[in-house]
Image 1 (tube, rainbow, N blue to C red):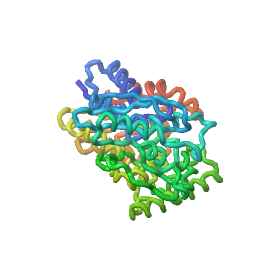
Image 2: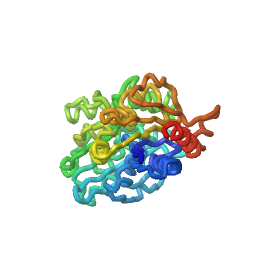
Image 3: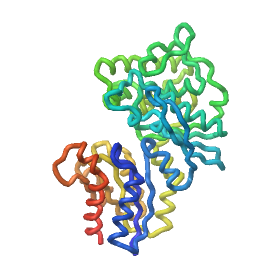
Image 4: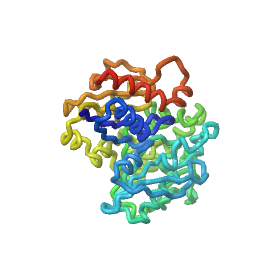
Length: 373
């Protein structure tokens, strides 16, 4: 009897990690009826982060209606661990790019207020620790909207609250007293982004265009975040904007690190601490690991979740099969994997590939299983 571990990230915009697990389990057991399959949907902090906990039964889903990135009400879900009074929150649930129609994307105006409302909902339940997954944001506001929703005073030169949205940070002149109960909470930020807040590798330059930012808008946003960084530094005498990862989720990491003393942790490490994949591999004779995400490229080398899974597999001498949508790097660049497969089996545009991702994944897995058996 063969044993498999299926531990993918999502194929963003086309396939949830849990869907990948379900399809893989069906294909494996159709070709190997006696196979044992462990399914562990994964996330580096972005899309699917909360589901990684709820799917594994280590968090109870809690839903709440909050503000979306442009103010429209949206339903968001976080995971709650009552015994540890810990909330696992995925900012993309409230402030993610999938919450805004593409023609309406505008990082000058999108904000994280709804994420703050979700956090407040967890605090109202008694949260003593909050794990905040960052990724997939539609925002470039430094987390200001969320901080304001939590009662942090972000004030202009007339001592009035600034407006919501990334461009409003240009008006920030001072930060009032942070509510003491927020500082009593243990804050952990989960993400795999190492970009600083500002500059050519910063939040605006790298991720702003994906959020609908045009060149003139990006210039405004960079200056606005620069002002945010200056006011933060005046407030706490720390240069958090220089920290690797400060640019995550449109600079939300910088805001929470600077004002709430949040600690940044790679998303994979957070998930692995809870799901204990190393124990699973140690205690079970796993034959193969299947992992993947939407794109394998030059960034995969730098600690992306599938690579971390493959590295873990190598520690236990378990071969890892990588499966992706777009493959733009050489297989030789990722020797940690036993093999890598793209589900795109012919010439097609991105929309066709994304629209047919479940079928394409199924076909690819059939081919892979025939090789392995």
